[in-house]
Image: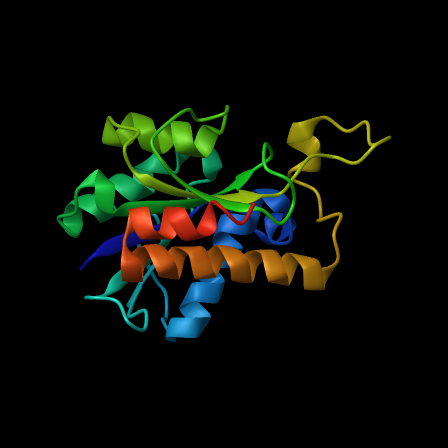
Length: 191
């Protein structure tokens, strides 16, 4: 097993089509591409598949603990797979990136993201790989607090969201196939 790929989100239909659940959407896309089925395990939905051109299998995980407790799902999965944190890849929404931009990062600040904070606390390190998916911020005149906006339906149309999810899934696949440095050099220069 080479990687544990974790998509952050919240369970429940009310959160499905929201910017905060883009991590779930990317993992669903990867599962579809790899024909991976999920089972209930590690307080989440878990499946093992193969990404074309990659060495070994990839475990996909959607924690069902709610965002703020994601680490409770990630830690036991990582330990069962006998992986180091450097082999954990977390996909999450990023309001500090414009909509449509995708960036790969290792470690660094958490930008107030409670899902990342939970994982960092449970793993006792920030040194895991992140695919930051740019969801932007509320548009001009939108007075909703960020926490309300991020849990509301996308402002963008379904086709734009699909392109964003596809870009993030491609970034994950590149990390798994070619390694973090190669992927960062290709993906991060696009934005």
